View 1 (tube, rainbow, N blue to C red):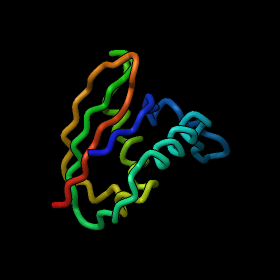
View 2 (view 1 turned 90 degrees about the horizontal axis):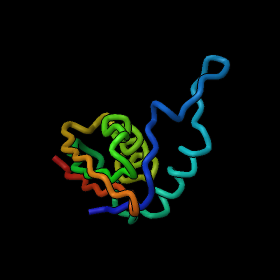
View 3 (view 1 turned 135 degrees about the vertical axis):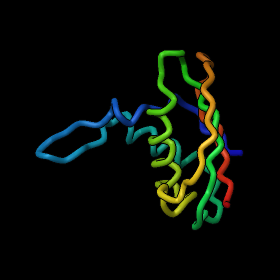
Length: 110
């Protein structure tokens, strides 16, 4: 089980369009860097996998579905998987922890 401290930003709310291209804002880039630094460096999962996760948000207003795309992108960027299109199942829970927002996840190779 990996535990990544910090409030995960929603992908849909933190990208901007300029000259026909999508750009990540600084908040997403900071989170991705922090995520990668906190991950244990294991051999990446190359095949199909299931993601089991609990996302602890600062408040109940945050959307779980928006956080999942960011999480999959971060997992791929950190080198834990080779491609997020090999995710065949997601088991996700939303919790609120105002003092210690975080993401707990496990990748299970199928």
